[in-house]
Image (cartoon, rainbow, N blue to C red):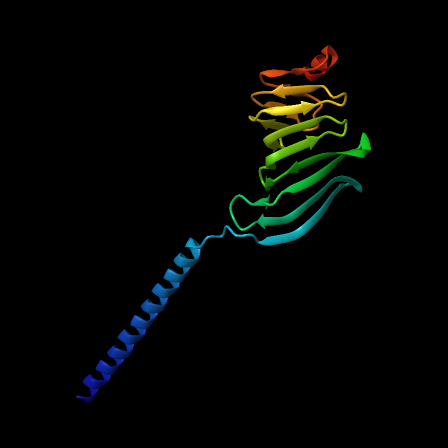
Length: 196
């Protein structure tokens, strides 16, 4: 009898330990699944009153001001966003004293794609004094192209104007650009320069 009783206690202890193992294992799996489903789309860095300076071999290439910048780095396609607007100065080594500027109410930069977008009363001034106004603009840094499908209003240095009713595409240094369905008041010289 004692022999049989000992076996039953061992069996109960064995079954009990197996049950605890399976309960703990299933809990771990559930926790893993639950953590995997949690959203990672939250800012990993927040910069208030941001003042950013970018340099290339000691030369200042860009200065940016923004009330708030948020960096989303924990997702598959990391990006940086300035929801309350941005004011950027960009410098050219050919004309370092007169920066070009970009101002917008909203801006977003996709880190891996090297792709920028700016929206809301976008204003671009080149370091040569040309002024572009539109509601949105996109910059593909890998292709060195800027484009928009919005109506573009351009004011040249001499005060003449040009309107691209269906947007434009341009090199990112604005050395070449093409407008779609243009109208405006411009000289023959400016027309030939814009077609280069």
